[in-house]
Image (cartoon, rainbow over all chains, first blue to last red; front, side, top):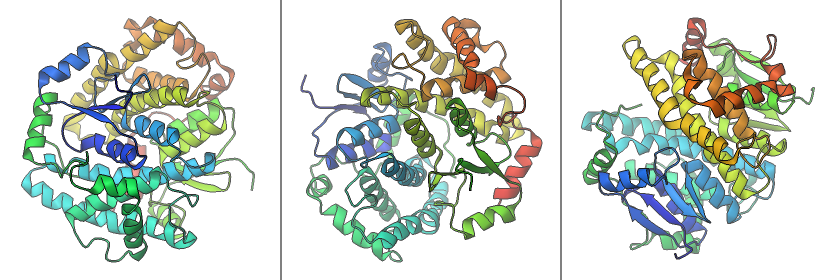
Length: 229
Length: 222
């Protein structure tokens, strides 16, 4: 056993991507096991590794952690990316809650019909530009600091950068009304661990394609239609 | 200003109910402001009180907190209901997140279209009895302690008792295959702060009815 965290998920972004981002930003090397077949998934189930029969699952520090938010909170706290006290943690949790909601709209995107994709793309951009980006733009403008919380790099910064890049993939000029966020994006992207993660060859996963959707549906036997928001 | 936390939401369970449960379980008194009209909601937004234009909103310790998860984590941390170290917190978070997934199904249920209601009700029962309750039954059986984590009352216990009661409202016999959970339910219900919350006249809200659904649609409809 290597001692490194081991991530169990599909070979694609989904709910595991935020975890890859956070571990990478914290400078933590990790291993991955990719689910490709139903048999692999059933083996995990039968082995009792999946508390609620679901992935993501991360083996870390002797635990088999499930539930994305629990995993992220643990990593953030362990690697000092969770603020210095309860109130900073509260702010980080609030900000991460927002970016989580925003990325949630994008999570289901690959599973939508072509027609629903267009509707959803417009919905994502509308929510990003009228609800979420203005909130973070204001936070940064009001305190004038480099990072969202406590003048110190935290989980909230990693999560926001991830969300910005994902929305930009849907509309490349989406940051045009947000100068603070443009500067934020440049700053956080140039942090060495983050910069490394953004380079080709890292464990960052590409935009999900049809092959990814097929794999998820096959492994989870998830054949129902996913609706747009 | 009273110094008590102030909750702003509709006069019903929704996403605020776990917050009411946790504050009550911690023995913390709180005030409530109920949204009844679209105008009230729009005023909250205009006054800049809602970070993401959404409720729940909890004003606590000088903060205007939104995002249910953030609010609950803060309360749990402040009132020592979050375990004694990182690993206990990890367990509590895992359990709470699982229970929240189950509660989400119950939350959305009143808003199901009529032709989907029966299917959704069946899903709630199936998930409760095959996915979630067995996990907690096993946890309690394996360590034989009264509480889910660290032999000490925590947020996870409050979340679980809330979920058990919510599912029982739909399926009264749902705990019949779960003796540990039955004992857990009795123990938790008898803890003084929870017992008080379960009595008539407490801030606990009744199951959502048509009037509640109507109010939600009226206040938040575009």
